[in-house]
Image (cartoon, rainbow, N blue to C red; front, side, top):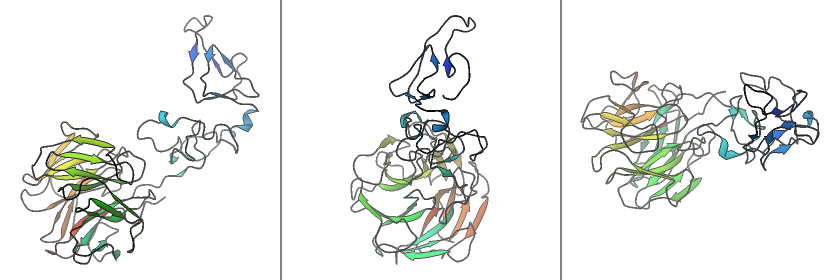
Length: 374
């Protein structure tokens, strides 16, 4: 709050409305930049310890109102501005990942900047559709398509040991916008993650959760920071254990959802497009999906049936149309056919195609393999 021109209390003047002659004290909540030339310009306003007063002219803090990108004009902090890295990260609303312009990330340099513009943030690429892939356990080969259609794999490589009983997973492990693959070793409850579409050693490897426990691996951006991390599902008590970082230790999120020992399959997706992945369950006996929009137990926020019951088809989730929210799908291993929905409803599939060999024991994957586009 700097550079205004009122004759008295030019930055802020607190009075009681409608009696403007009666003063009223306003208390700042902190992490504001006030005034210029050493004067805070405040009347009847109490500053917080974390508030700053600009020592020089307004031009030493921000540039003029200009088109700095985004839908509205903004003031861009100049080099050396005291507004840079002077905000409070805890005041950023949950799920907000960009500045006013829509540039991201919202935090550059460890601490958010004061004001509407984050110095160093860049335009956010528009989401593109997630597509499918297959994992062949006999050679630990990954075969990935970059469009929702049949045909040859656009990416093919081997990673990890063959015939090891490991589970394939996929996620954007480094936040660069494209998904890559990983493997989960249930015997040791160990995760091995790749940041590129290539074989060789894992870029990340860690243990999380108990080995040989029959728990199922999960992947999602649980906190909305743009980076996918892992989780586990314990079918014995239908409890989810989710990590917000790449490492072992205690779960950052833990809650029960759905019936225990039911044979239901855990699934993950950003069902409402808020940037945060949450969980769901698939009941194969009814081919029914039960989805949560928050990290909590209780009743499902979305529930519907899609596809044939008791058919041995495998559930999938992904943003098939690139609109920012994930919906469900099914994979028929008998024919190698994918059936994908673009809405949270039953009925016919919006997309249906074959990819890969039928009856081969290959396992389906989902990811944005080639990243978003600006």
